[in-house]
Image 1 (tube, helix red, strand yellow):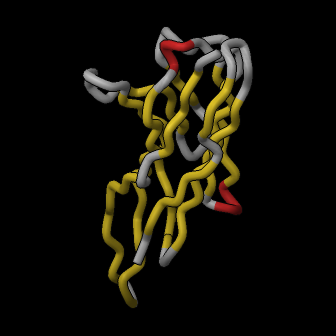
Image 2 (cartoon, rainbow, N blue to C red; image 1 turned 135 degrees about the vertical axis):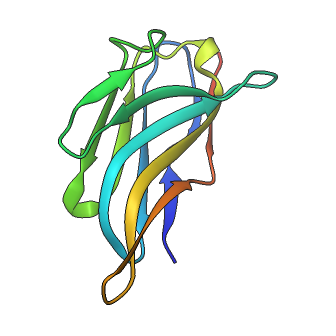
Length: 124
């Protein structure tokens, strides 16, 4: 069973920093794009940042210059370093991965997975 497990959320004061991690585990052949999304109360889920297998990145305008996405392909892990946090960054953050899982000899299947979500609260 392939799954994504997130960690690193919590409560932080405005201007503070947090680092989120998301590790993929299971029978993974390869991972294409990994990304972070967030959903604030009463709002739709939105893309925060994503990164390709070769390190190409893109960010939501609202987080450019403050957040940095990175990944460790050897560990099948994606990170989100969040600096200069604002109250409007408060949301449940979920990681997403587009990957190929190996089900058996010659049997590879493309999956899109979501993590369980981790709450980030920015408040004084």
